[in-house]
Length: 310
Ligand code: ATP
Ligand code: ZN
Image (cartoon, rainbow, N blue to C red):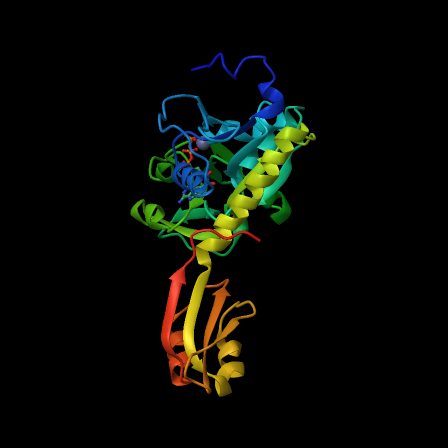
């Protein structure tokens, strides 16, 4: 662990520097660091340090295992954390059982970390529904999420807690089925399993401690939230430019996906054609461009947007 006398010790940094816990190394790490970078938060790249300071903003980054992130927020050790909803809910249920504090605020849903928690059984088995698992052993890292679903379905089962390699449990004779995170399903297939029921869908979220922040910190937090939102909406957005016949403007506007009011600019030397510029909040497909061309639009340009505010 590295500490730094300038700002980690008790000299008021608690009031000023926003402390964010992120996954040290795993499936959320690259996207989290990219979100920070795109939002103008510069962090030193030494991944071995537990604590990193942003070079240009009063922000400290704590790099930990994802399982520790909800607890760090709920215990008010950090101000914010970025974690999958699956880990957040599972930890909340465990802490509830342990009589620990579970308060937090969901600050923002993020646009990465999408996955689902699914039940899978050996490929050759018939499947009629969750009741097929009555009295069976199910290997999982998420016993509480699984138990909640099975309780609602009225099915009794035994859970086998595994924190890794869950997908090999049936072949190893440790369990009859598994309940694990799935993204593409390729891992299941290569282990002779088939996905039969999705019990939870998850994405990454930004959570915060459920206490007011010191005003200086709140101001930083508000600014960063706006930047995160700006980065996420810019991902899908495009700036579209074209020259178009005045007579077809209504039809052209109708087919532009998720577009705001366009700017219409006169074209020199042309009375029946104008330039049209617009921000589209959705992806623009080739089909749309072909329809625009068919309506007489020319010089159609679709440009990615790097940053967007407001
Ligand atoms: P750690 O060492 O931090 O405990 P881990 O092995 O528990 O890491 P990862 O596999 O890195 O966790 O996954 C972190 C989170 O990423 C998951 O809890 C989930 O929310 C999300 N995730 C996104 N896609 C996937 C996927 N294809 N498979 C598993 N998790 C995914
Ligand atoms: Zn983990």
